[in-house]
Image (cartoon, rainbow, N blue to C red):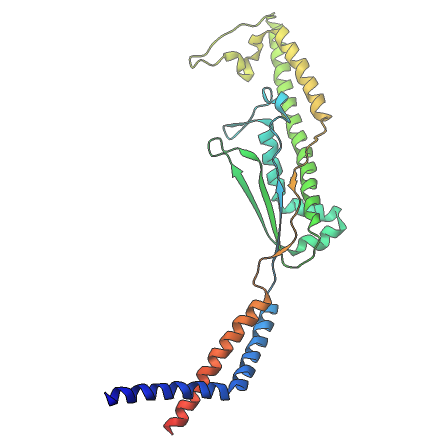
Length: 293
């Protein structure tokens, strides 16, 4: 029984000596921890700082080109797209293009200072799982900067620039498509006139599709129908050329820059704690060596 009590007393004495030793060397421990904190701060400030801003973009409303959809169904890689879907694809391609950034920087003096500091770009889109089309109001465009420039409003200007560029490219491609349709209709109109076919002849293919929908057999529609369709296509071409897109793609403007990398003060705290533990460990080893001697 006495042996156990003696052991407990010795343990209490050892713990007491430990705390006494730490207390006696408190200034040494504090000095070492401070040095570690300074090193941690210097290390933290030497690392690149990254700041993030996000602008929320809404895709173009489905009703914008509704009147053109029946005529201008667009086929890309055996998939049909409505006109608004086609515009959205063009918009997104330009939004993530480095060449678009370069064009904007050349036209904007502030952009020259802003965009070279872009470390990363990210686009997140909410797709309709069934149709794989883009839902409205679900495009987040996020950029990461390696400097706190506080002029993230340029991101809003960039989005509007992309919209104008997308509309310009979109018009060119749609007009090219309309001109192609006009050429096909004109060629078939000449054939219909040559064979004196004024009224349509309805023929069907074995799979149930109307043969008069094939580009090379449109003359079966007859010259009267083709002339009216040509007239409509030319009006459509004029409308598209003069079309003014009243669409604001920005749903939420660019958010204030937020620091996303580890702030230097965190390195101070971590380094201070490491300094305390290491200094205590060194002091304990030193005292242990002294006691053995």
